[in-house]
Length: 118
View 1: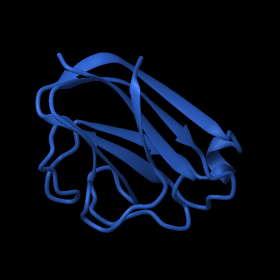
View 2: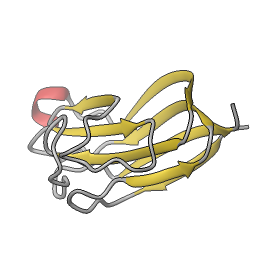
View 3: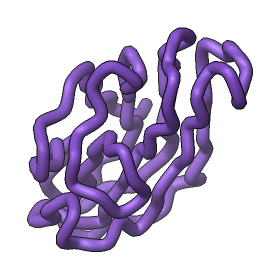
View 4: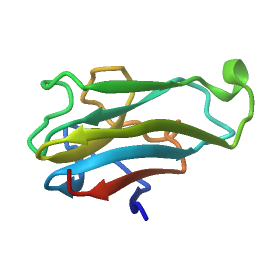
């Protein structure tokens, strides 16, 4: 059974350490902001030392604004158990590799699902 790290807010240039240690990234569930007026990006790292805006993400998931992407309330991305040797971190920013945290357009929550161990 996967473990879940749930985050509802983000701080500039500070990635959330969803898990520290070897794990497998199973999936990411994003509870979308149906009233967003601008695009945001969920960034993910196979790391526990990433700095958003400095460290390029291993994955960046575009969340378009509600006006261009529709008013979907949930996005699920399956990673199929990608191995992360040291851990997994996440961040929601205003650009695919940027360090500015999304605020008013940010999703309501991001749930990173992982299985501990290799």
